[in-house]
Length: 424
Image (cartoon, rainbow, N blue to C red):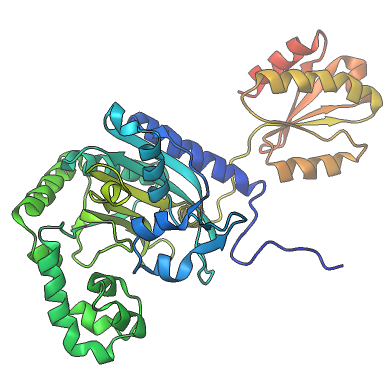
């Protein structure tokens, strides 16, 4: 019988790689907490209508990439292709806006049916940061700073912030008209997708990656040149706040993002660590999304950061550097040593902030050292018949390859305390 493999476009995460995920998720939570954001967890599947209305019926996500199915109640359900729409649904359902502005973040998987490639999977994972109920550019600057601090914590020094404004319901119609005037004379030369979107939503053409569309996209009019007074003032205020925070940025009028719900501010952090400049995280303002999903008019701004791609950047920066070794590998040579060492290991696991590894199988010492290397242990505890006779235990520094002998007399808690002191 052939073994069952993970579905195409998905992957398993297991030690030691899973430790990097745990650290990143912890850092995401820590930075969000510093800004007063609370964690929200929503279902990974929702009513299909939620994403059709929230994400936009003319987006690639809704038209091509959603995992949609009919459940046993004959309801159309979809595995979430992004996290924001579900967060809005939850906030409305539980009437959280009655408590005032909501600052929320979520960590979890999302699903898109697309061709798997490096850093892009059919099941991927995302940090989603959302601020609802604050109309001013201070909220835009706030969420941008959250992303900037996370990038800085991981030393992604070349990460560059690209900034743009896509206007609102006041100035967007005249931009739509300008795009139609620009693209219509070239309709026959556009890609099939862009021809289909031309009359329905010409802004989506600006997000096209098809080479046939490139020359027409590059010469298209710019939204930033057609902003209304309010959108212009919002954009200028945001720039002033970013300057005050010391966050460098470049105005990139070609950023439109891939979702229909964006208004005014859109932004991306890009890095060239993986080769060609690629997006590490992106987001913007979506002042009409809550109302579109049945709620009251409510401003909102946020971003999404793909964990897989972020970890690829971090790994590339780390290069060939060996990972930091942590914790203790307990090595018992013989039954008597095992009986004596087991309660000490138990106390170490209760009291030490570092991991304690133990493999109680009868093995040669070299095999135990190989296990310590696989576990990334910094220290090894070695207890055999000679050590038992002398009431000592050997503490080996696995980096310096140096041994120390420590007293083994006394209760397990006392021995564990001595070992913790010797390894910190």
